[in-house]
Length: 109
Image 1 (tube, rainbow, N blue to C red):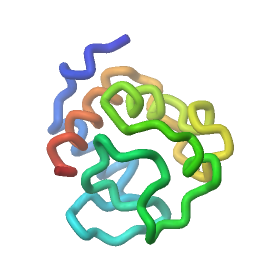
Image 2 (image 1 turned 90 degrees about the horizontal axis):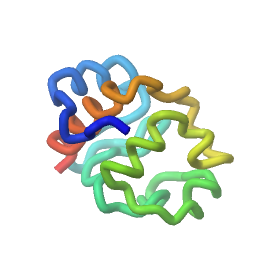
Image 3 (image 1 turned 30 degrees about the horizontal axis):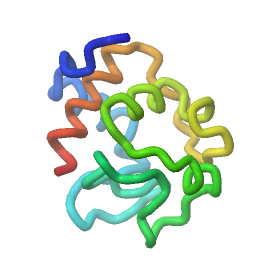
């Protein structure tokens, strides 16, 4: 497993703009697009923003988002949460996932 703390937030910002921003916002009180706003993502339980319509699979997964759970999820969302409606195919490169996680940690709090 990659050392998640070695992620580069500036590279993660580029990845977010390229791969995530079409479906997610990150600012406080940001709107939902195809996916939920990600502000305050870490330590939040899956599928718990009341204003967003999550898949049953996401609501019932019952995990808390952390570096480790997000690292696994971002590799293959449909494998980690079977039945999710998220269409993102995942980031196969561990360093890219670490970069994105470090960016999200700084940008969503």
